[in-house]
View 1 (cartoon, rainbow, N blue to C red):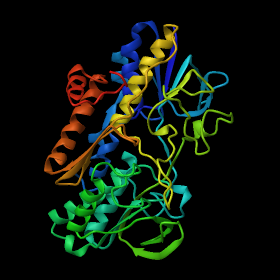
View 2: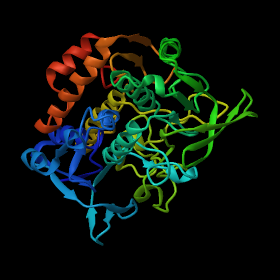
View 3: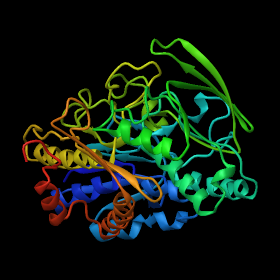
View 4: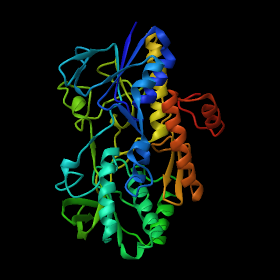
Amino acid sequence: MARIVILGAGIGGVPMAYEMKETVGKKHDVIVISDSPTFHFVPSNPWVPPRWRTPEDLKIELAPVMKKKGIEFIQKAAAKVDPVNNQVQLVDGSAVAYDFLIIATGPRLAFDEIPGLGPDGFTSSVCHVDHAAVAAEDWDRFMENPGPIVIGAVQGASCYGPAYEYLMILETELRNKKVRDKVPMTFVTSEPYIGHLGLGGVGDTKGLMESALREKSIKWITNAKVDKVESGMMFVTEVDEDGNDKKKHELPFKHSMMLPAFTGVDAVRHVGVEGLVNPRGFVLVDEHQRNATFKNIYSVGVCIAIPPIEKTPVPVGVPKTGYMIESMVTTTAHNIADELAGKEPTHIATWNALCLADFGDSGVAFLAMPQIPPRNTTWSAEGRWVHLAKIGFEKYFMRKIRKGISEPYYEKLMLKLMGVVRIKGE
């Protein structure tokens, strides 16, 4: 009986546990380690500050579901992965042995790389549900005395969608409260152009998003490096196409949310052995989601290493989006099952991306197959239906988590009819 340990219980880790257990059944143990007792539906975090959701709306207690599925749940923080001895060391001094380890931790939020950035500095965050709860308090204070807003993503960021969503959700909320006229809004991003998204754009995301910002009278600064943040003031350097300083900006704000760059989490990036992670602490994987040095270690989600798709004037990372992560999950489950049967892994994730970006009362949807160019299929569209679809997706995904389901047959069939599959060759 093999011990399959999953480190992390987020968008990647929880579906990974469900699908892994469904694949191997009672023949093998599936164990989840998480520092949190709850699953958090991160995509809905931007709805928390304007009070469209509460933090509790986005949390699900994991222990009861895991127990029902026959999955062991260890609610403790990991101190360090020990790939040499096949163990995960925990902060209480104990260790969990594994035959296979799946790292699904998500990222470390590198607010410390820019002075004054983040919830412990002068900007809000929607990267974690607890951060979003603090941002809600800041938003309440802001609404008592509105003023300039600065939203965006700093250099090295690799997740741009939530910044656009938060910007447009707040814009919608301000219009709903009849105070939009009191609030100048500026979007600051390391992207070379609006709608780049770390992906070189998808379909006409550049045109769609630029048009949306112009229509809403939102100014923007691209190729931007945030130098530092002080109370009520952001210092930004805009560079030209060659990366040379072009203009210095001092942007006053009364509310700001800037997405940080990511690194690997401390328990993984500080392992002290060669071959597991890159210099930023992201897990190195091959096309089968397996580490080449430690072949009993797989990884899925935001914590894996993906090189930038192109050279840009300001560093821009590649996002790991929801369906892309789900394709990693299914591939990993199949490949570990193959190994348990004495075979070599052969399954390869499609890394297809199907995304809904909510703009408060409308939105932009895009499909990229695969997410990383060159692509076989590229499509994007806009409309109020995207906002409604995002609400529906939130309820559907959280229902799957509560029920302990990764991919129902009807979801698989529906997406397959659209040509969207998780594993290459399906």
